[in-house]
Length: 505
Image 1 (cartoon, rainbow, N blue to C red):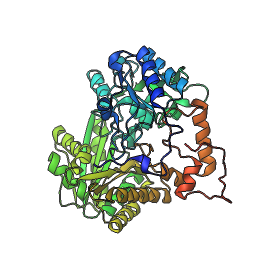
Image 2 (cartoon, rainbow, N blue to C red):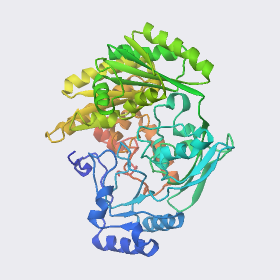
Image 3 (tube, helix red, strand yellow):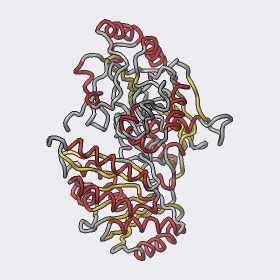
Image 4 (tube, rainbow, N blue to C red):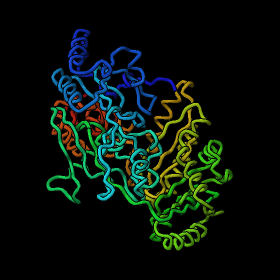
């Protein structure tokens, strides 16, 4: 994919100041005093792997990358950056899709890749205490001998880290029944920009005071550096059964989802793919999908043998009554895993049918699935770009994949504009601009559409309470009012913004 430098975007926040070569050299020298040689990178060829996250259209080199081995090194490096007013961007596995880990110009990238140990796994209390660089899937693998697992399962779970999951409040194909990351984390330990070590939450069902544990979920590295996470483990269900339903119309499939939930069924997972995604996944994984279907639903039911047996027939009849042309039940565990493998490989599979794709993330009320799918199809025709739809149908979390060719001048910008229109359609029907990927820099303009000036001011107030100097991941997630005015989503009275004293960066 061709580079898309945010510095050329007039809406991207400008650096507050340009750091001089002398200041850069002094920073590197100071960091070198507190970090071992292998924990500090500052040559260009060493920085290149850190220039972007999963949203590779946006790339920027940091001044330096620090890879601390322990908490003391992280705290010391953070202190040096604060003393010099150097912005710091935390990075986990780099699988994020909203530019949340894009380095700040004249800033330092703090990688937590070496914080990768499972510190404690207690099968009796059903919890695990892990460092932020532990892979999502590794937690379930470690818990498996005890008949336990960690429920949130993003498609990137084989690679994504638990610290990044907290920062973005990640979901997954089973989040409908078992919740997002925020519903499965008991406690978080984090470093503030001042170097204070905080513990939010605990092993009890509730903690006194403000619910800061929920606040840190989805905070995108803007409030603190996550250094430890305590997660809840669940017992593996006695039985899990997947049904695959085919439809000859995507909107009908969307309406079937609303009917299923309306009947009181809460599946372990309920996913939808349209024809473009079906064909791509089938060619890639050979999951056994019907390639002529306009859309398929994957519905997983889990629980005891008796309740799953009863629900399988009930769901089968509901899907047929809702317009399904075929309903197939996985014959065995191997076929069940193939059905899910196709869904989880849908993103890379779509990459095989288009030079580039732009993955969006929005959430809508389930009752509007049919309407929004129709709206996406209309927008797709209007922009002349194909859109493959893959999403968590049960909770209305959409992942439209906009297919384009970055080598064609203007196509990336057109894809971004189409993506913005899809997100604004989500807001129009009462939804939100993100469900699990975060805002980062990708959706920051649409934040201006979703929230009013007073709400944005409160967001900035929360940020200032944790990070008064604005050094942690600046320019991400929460737009300034000046930015919203430039985007055209805010009324400017006589040339003045409602809150003119807010910083412009």
